[in-house]
Image (cartoon, rainbow, N blue to C red; front, side):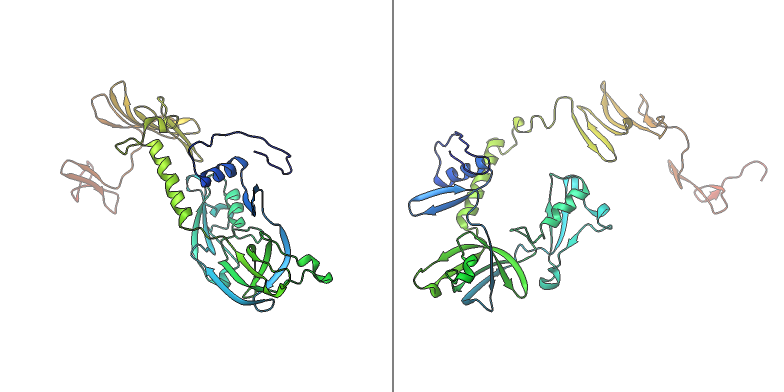
Length: 342
C-alpha cells in the first residue's frame, strides 16, 4: 500500500484473505484512517479527499435551471441534548440548560435530538463537541436538511473573469436555499466541453443505499458471533478484564463504588461509608457516620444495631406505633404516655 500526503509515503501489509471488494476497500480506509475512492476509467485510487474548497455559489433562483430538489429532514436536529460518559450533561457550563439550540431553529423549526459523546466526561468538552454539530465549517452539520440538488449549470469558468469558478467532482460549494447558505459537495458532474450550457451538476450528500445497511447488519452479526456462544450467551473471555477476580472499582465525582467478589463498598475520599455483602461466610451490613464511627450494623446474631442519635417521626414496635403530638408529648397508638409529675 502506498499513501501520499503530508506524511510522505507509507507502506503497510495486512491480511485480505477470503473477502469481497467492499471489505477490501473498507480495510484500506480503516488502515489509513479515512479516505475516498477516486475512479478515472481504469484507474482507481484511495485518496484523502476528492476535490477541494470552491468559492462557487449556487443560487437556486439564479444560476441553475431545470432543478430537482430533495430535502431530507429525517435526521435533522436543531435542539440538541448532548451527553458524555456516565450521562454527564452540560447544565453546569450552559446556564443550567442541558441543551443547545441552533440559529436555524427559526428557519426549520425546533427538532429535538440527542448525541452520546462517551469519549468525554468534562461538561466544557461535551459542550464544545456539541456546538461543532451546528458549526458552518462542519460538512456533516445536523441543523440543516440533507439537500440533494440536481440541475443544469452554465459553466463560465472558461471566461477570463470567472476562471476561479471552475468546478470539479468532490468540490465543496455554497448552496443558497431559502436565504440560508449551506456548504455541500459536488457528488455528480456531467460535463460537455463543447456545450457548456448542458452541464448537469448534483450537489449534496451521498445517500446510503440498501447495500450499505445490509453490510452494516452483516458486520454486527459477525461481531455478535465472536462474543456469543451457540446458546446465545456472552462468552466469559469477551468480558475478561472488565471484572477481575478481585472485583470492579468505579470512580465518580462524588465517591467510589467497589464491587468485590462478595461485598459492595461505597467510599468517599477514601473513607468507606457503606458495606453490604459477605465476609468470612457471614452477612455484613454496616453504615458509618461522617466521623467514621459505625452508625448502623448487624450483629453476629442478626440483630440490627443503631448507635448515636436516631431521628424519626414514627416508630413501630410490634402492633404499637409510637409518635409525638403537636405539644411534643410521646403517644402510643395515639394515646399520651403519662410520666411522673403530670
